[in-house]
Every structure is written in C-alpha cells, then in structure tokens.
Length: 103
Image (cartoon, rainbow, N blue to C red):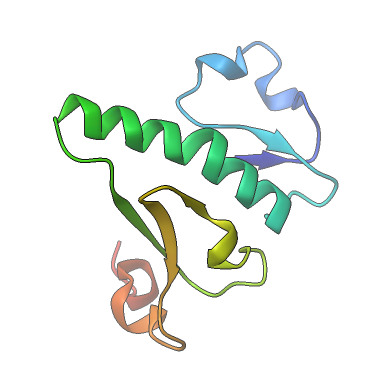
C-alpha cells in the first residue's frame, strides 16, 4: 500500500504493522523503482523464502512482472535463485484476468 503520508487519517486508530500489507509513502502515492526494489528485497524475498522453507522446497522462485516504468531492470531484482522476469511486451491484456474484465 502506498499513501501520501506516513500516517493516513483513515488509519489513525489502526497499527499499520498489524495490517497484512506492507505500507510506504511518497508524495504522489505512485509506485516507483526505489519503492518496488525496496518491496522486492524487504518484503517479497523474505516471505517467499519463508514459504519455501515451510513447504520444504528448494530456494528458487520467479516473479513475473510487466514492463511498467515503475519497475527496475530485472538485473536489479535478483537474490540468488529468487528473481524477476518481464512478461513479453503487449501480452498483459491477454493473460491477466483483471485486464480481461473478469472480477
């Protein structure tokens, strides 16, 4: 979740740490490369590692992302065998359910 302020008025009586989402803030509430990279290494990788360990699976995972400008280069999104890969250009509307009008 990305908000404009560190502590939103809508969440004033809620401990953000108690939510099951990560929260950060920036002036326009948009994703950017810095926030995405921070999320990847601080949130995604540790949670994937924990899941793989619980399931007794080898430490390897692949995150497919579209080529939005807010995403860093995939070379910057690697932690051992946990990495990201861009989807081919112009296929997101063909394969992502929300882009197909499914709810």
